[in-house]
Image (tube, rainbow, N blue to C red; front, side, top):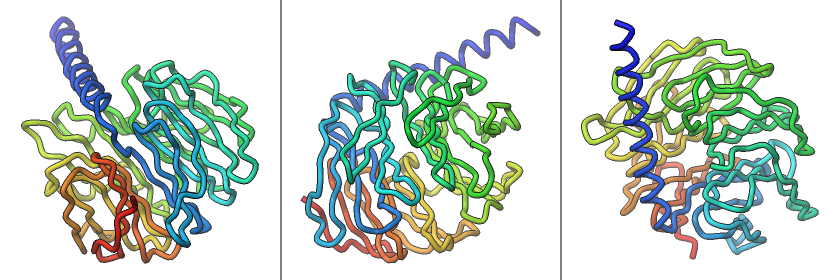
Length: 320
C-alpha cells in the first residue's frame, strides 16, 4: 500500500512537471501580454508580459503614460489599494520582482523570491502587506517598503499560480495543485483538492463580501477547464465547464455583482455563477481588469492585444 502511494505521488509529480515544462517552453517563444490591472483610482492601466517592458496607460486618452524596462516575462501586476504603487512579479528574467512607485519612479526589489520567479501577488485590503507566491512553492510577505516580514512553504514545492487575500481578514488563499488557506503567520488552515483529476489551478478571486470565492483551472486534453464557486469554508457551490481555454485571470467589479473571466473569451458572470455576457476573442485572453465604476473592462492577450470592452462584453476599441 505504501509503495503504491509513493508510485502514484511520483507519477502525479511528473505529470505536473511535464505540463509546467511544456508551458514554459511554449510561452518563452511568444510575446504574450500576461497581465493587466486597472488602478483603484481609475486613472491608469498597467500591462505586462513577454515584451521586456511594463507599460502604464493613461485612462483619459489611453496613451502611454510611463514605461519601465523589465526583461523577459512580467507574470502579474497588482496596484496598491489606495496609492499609485505597483507590485510586479517576474519569471525567466534577470530583473527581480519589485514594487514601483509611479509618482517617484522608485523601484524596490523584493528579495528572497525563487530564482525561478513568481506568478502570484496581492496586497491585503489595507495595503499594509504584500504577499508574493513564487515558483518554488513559497509564500513571502512584505511591508509596503519591500521589507520581508515572513516566508513559508505552500505545503509542497509546486509552483503557486495565484494568491489572494481575504477581503476583510489576514487570511491568504493560494492555488496550485490544490486550494490552500493560510493565516498571516504561515499556518496552514485548510487544503482542498478541487477536482478528482490532476489539473492545475490558475486563478482565484475572493468576492468583496468575503462570503465566497471563485477559482479557475487549466484543464488538459481530456478534462475541460473549470470555473468553480466556493463558499468561505471551501465547500464547492458550483462548477462550470463551458470554456475551451484555461482561466488565466478572474476579476470582480467594484460593486461585486459581476465577475469577468479571461480564457477563450471574455465572460461576465453574476454572484451565483450564471453567465450574463460573452465577448468572443480571436486569441486567448490572459489579463482582465474592471475600471473603478464597473463600466469598462480591459483585457490583454496571447497575441499582444489590449482590448477595451463595455460591461456587456462588447468591444469598444483596441490599444495599439
